Image (cartoon, rainbow, N blue to C red):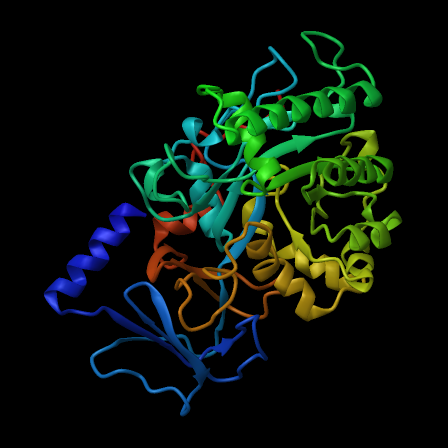
Length: 420
């Protein structure tokens, strides 16, 4: 963020303005109806105009990108991923609210290239879900970066909230050793005890008492204060209701993740006002609690009025294949409009950044993707990915294409994330 701000100020100081106009594509802005022959104008990394050819002026001197016959839509927002070769809490305890995944991310990781090849421009990177609370997530823009600070959607990781808080219930954390619970009921008791401790800490701090620094309780206090969003891994319908119950007790509304059996309790989720980030391509032969996962979940959630997004949980679902999630949702009855919104603007809302990303609108970041055809077609390929008006993936470049199609030794450092 700081690097981009400096570059922007230098541009202003020099009197130069970098302008790009994408012309001729079918534009899917998400925030409005599709435009058959559209123009998107970008200046200094921001969208300045979106509209039909003839209604939007292409600035004199702008670089014109002819995307005739293509489809242009916002960059994809992935609300739950494990790209970046990070790790999270270890097996020493079930609660790690002080752990920050940003301290373990490699900005040069090949998995970021895989995400860019899939059209993903914004991502919520999680620590693993083998804990009741595995730590603080990181909201990232997938810019080409040398240091993780240049990808973060915050100004300073020492003072700002740079992501959410990852929580989980169900079987992942049931280990019965090192303080981990052996039953679902005990798991909830551990979480409630931690929040009660954080509430006492928060009250003492508000009263002016000298409480000192406490990294474990500070993150929990931010949840209680509503400044840090809870992202809650949950599968079974009874676990979903437990997650909502915990939120109701302590005054926060979680973003529900996975929600394999959410179709069973869609009305309850809607009544709680909780958004749901769902997955449709879970690992074959995965955990028993995910056996109730169906493609129709998106349609049932939409009908109930739940705000729905999709996510990859990469590497459970390969980021390069992410658009298939929306296509499978539509195949099972979800509307086209809501399925595409679930890949973009709905996810931005869940991360609290919908004023910046998720749709093609004037004033927003110039995050967009160029597709060879309709985004819901299995034959469509992502040809270009742009972040803040800068191209970060181009299928026409052999080195980039390799990340899209694979090949020997392309993903040199690839490793499947685990939940330990």
